[in-house]
Image 1 (cartoon, rainbow, N blue to C red):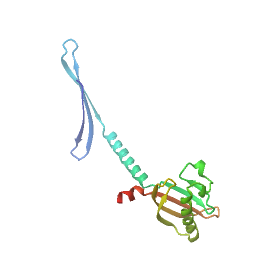
Image 2 (cartoon, rainbow, N blue to C red):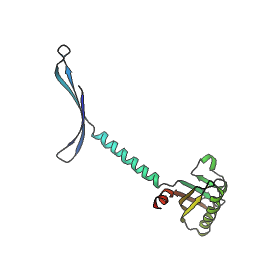
Image 3 (cartoon, rainbow, N blue to C red):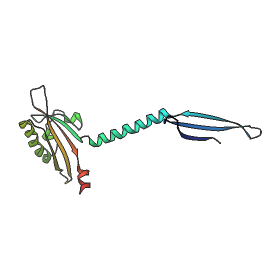
Image 4 (cartoon, rainbow, N blue to C red):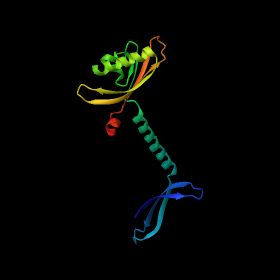
Length: 169
């Protein structure tokens, strides 16, 4: 019967090699007795290293996504979005006040205007209650962006901290 085994071989220099061994007996059809064996040895070290690098990259990507903003936007001084972390075709050149719930837009409008007036970035934690009563906690960062149009442009990002706040309670 065919046998396979993956072995890690440690070399004298400390290097490890991942070797896949497969062996299968050759059977005499007339006597049904094995008369030889065929073995195949494949060095899988490169594939193992590549796989581990992929696993590491996925872990880095997942960590990045956990720390990435849930929402990002750019808005000019007239409160028109030039980018929003939603469907671009539905948000570009639309007024901020028409894209988010009124309770959120009222709270955020003054924060945006404060950054425009002072020229200083603003980072803060904000509790937001949706119309259905669900409450979220966000870290919000609003900052000036150098613009070529002559208008003041703000960038913003919101990171949902609700899970972190709930687990701390």
